[in-house]
Length: 370
Image (cartoon, rainbow, N blue to C red):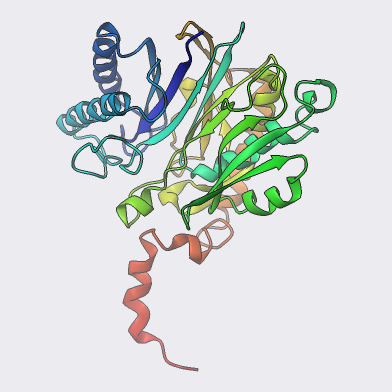
């Protein structure tokens, strides 16, 4: 069977209003663009989604990852949406399009990218996670728990297919290097890295000695683009996305969703400068309003059938996650009471590419030696 490729490419091309949501006209423009590509045979299927103020293009095709035609399609679609955003005078129109012209691949140009290529199993569940108001490292904790924590994923203990664990590809986003680590053998060393989520980011996960899934196939892929490194200044938070395959030799759907029942702390929120809780929400609640947040995540569930995206199912539209949302509200209250003080505001080293340095620079001449 010929391999299928799933590409999830996102960009903030204009907020409505402010940084809260995506205007429906932008989604219509994107839909028209991808419909044409589907008719022309470039795409098998696609879905247009939104998380906060980020426009999300989920596409299936047989062109492989990092394909120039697919990436150019996404770039041109974002350009068309940006044109509409400017006509509507939406906030930050074209914010994530940080380069003037497409150069063969959208990586390093502003949009976030998560892609994977695989042979479809008899049943192929896929979950597309989309976050707003946070950084790529926000996926470190849930991805670790899904594929390496037996207290989260019972299959690591009782399913022979999962029992050998998984391999994690980890990027050092500061020094631009990567390392492949195995769990459970190297779990402690791996945690030493990924616990520093602003620097070490899980990029992808692979099976290990798994009788149901080939070792070279990606089972989870996460966007790792850091906007400030591309622009050289703060232009908005990275708002990462992830693709996770489930069932049949992989963690079950419920094991994939379980980590989000805990509203863990992430960096981002208002002006990309504050720590706050990750709130799992339904599609309709993926609007960041309170202090431009709190940070939130949606989960779109699909079955893949010969490349067709059967879905989506709004997986967090479930009262089972009400308690997580309530707890996130409590945590948001607690963190907000700190005002401009750490640990609500990020530590100084993480504020380097925000707007704070320009304030501190104005005070530099007033300091005297002690």
